[in-house]
Image 1 (cartoon, rainbow, N blue to C red):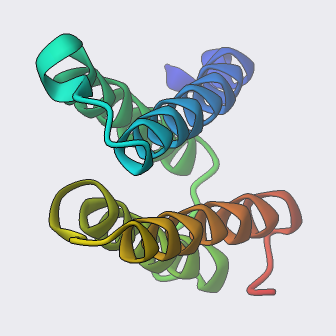
Image 2: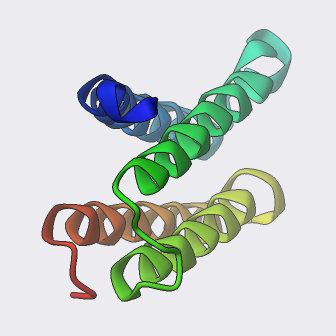
Length: 126
């Protein structure tokens, strides 16, 4: 049933990846500038969770449609970098105490995203 929607789900997934990266980058910049975005724009707190939930669902749908098992090398590697992205992003936005820590963890998170995109395009580890 989902097979007939492959292209639509793929483009949705790509759009959600782009939106997720933009939201994270925007929140990271605001955090680095000590802008009180959590108080001024509280929707920026939960909106990324909604986007990322649909991103994960679209990715799982694509894996089901293409019959790509999670344990297959490239997809499992991509999921490990997803976990690293979540960890570094959380450190950057919540736990980092200094601008240097915030900046370095944001760069690490975005580096994980770049690696995930490379893996997704090449379907290889590296």
